[in-house]
Amino acid sequence: MTAVGNGAQTTGRPTRLPRSARRKQLLAAAQEVFVAQGYHAAAMDDIAERAGVSKPVLYQHFPGKMELYLALLDTHCDAIVAKVHDAMRGTNDNKERVGAAVRAYFDFVDHESEAFRLVFESDLRNDPAVRQRVERVEQGCIAAITDTIISDTGVSRAHAELLASGLVGAAETAAQFWLAGGRQVPKAEAEALVAALSWRGIASFPLQGESA
Amino acid sequence: MTAVGNGAQTTGRPTRLPRSARRKQLLAAAQEVFVAQGYHAAAMDDIAERAGVSKPVLYQHFPGKMELYLALLDTHCDAIVAKVHDAMRGTNDNKERVGAAVRAYFDFVDHESEAFRLVFESDLRNDPAVRQRVERVEQGCIAAITDTIISDTGVSRAHAELLASGLVGAAETAAQFWLAGGRQVPKAEAEALVAALSWRGIASFPLQGESA
DNA sequence: ACTGCACGCCGATCTTGACCTCCACTGTGC
DNA sequence: GCACAGTGGAGGTCAAGATCGGCGTGCAGT
Image 1 (spheres, rainbow over the protein chains, first blue to last red):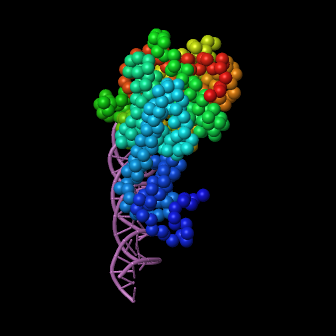
Image 2 (cartoon, helix red, strand yellow):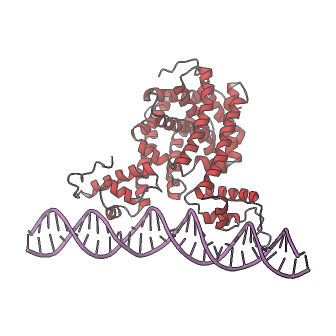
Image 3 (cartoon, chains in turn cyan, green, blue, purple):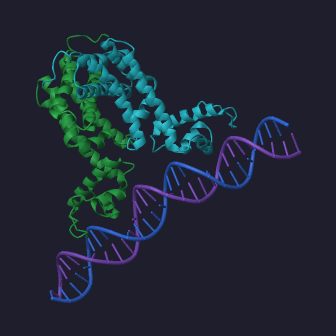
């Protein structure tokens, strides 16, 4: 339960690790604790204990708690935006694009649920540095989809952004719900369902104006 | 800027207020501070100062910071769920239902943006009591829509819930984006846009199966 | 009308808890 | 056998939640 996969469990004696490996391990331990407890409730003592090292080591690798958190956040923020971008760039068929984007969200939630919760359930959104990064993620995802919508439907940028935010929200919330509900529906099925919902919603937009 | 509409500004001398009025005023001040700063960054000193009273008065009305927060949260949680329920019950036409639900979200964001941010951007989701209430809101909204979807399309409950969560996410995120972006699109237009997106997405579901 | 009472309010304080550093120890290379 | 590097646990500091003695005000009784 408490043991993490570090290299110190051989005798309980401390083991020497190269700095880069130690850093990676500290990041992993920090991620587990931050996700489980949230930023505020997570104590540096917990993270150090989780990693099987002492607190000074932590401070030799990171100047403080915030920097440690931001390092994790940055990594995952980049990953999410990159995935959505890839989904848009991977094909020219818009139906496929929607499917790929939805799959990106579900993949992320499925395989990196910790990272997902770290970014989207952060209890530090009020901090300017964190808020900026999280908003950047949503803006980035929305922007990627917005461009596609504009070039295909010709609606104004403001309208396209609104639609894109709706699609992003649908994928995000559905994926989150699917995870929280214990994956009751097989993943492929869930993806197909949400992709269909999104695609039918967006597909017919260029044909009709935007009147009520 | 700093003055709140209390009755203490006449001379700078404290004014005696009946308990119920004082309580209401404290709740209003707390809401402003919680929304502006988030739960953790909000200090009881700030709330007291905002209300124009001293800290002990706060503790004479509420046992602690958490209870104060939960009192606010409960009020608004009930309000949101009630609005979505009303949107479902107000008509039998499903297209109108979607429109009403979307309008409910935008109305809420437009007129009670503080309450919206308090519930949906809470930095206390890790606390069990808060998590329970917030999840109850989303579950409530999803459930209300789920029932309608089931009775109209006949898909399984698990699938209907997933679709409902997608719709809720779309409305929620779009409304949030619309607010954060400074209401660049007129409200009615934005509502119509998101309603159209949602309706087109969900309307054709009974006709076609759920294959990929 | 005057006095004592009770109540609500305020300034100043205490304490807890968490982030962030200092002394004794242990195992290793020459 | 000896210096050294890195670890572990104990402590300082500070912010923020929670609380105690004094003060001023309005009211009841005579």
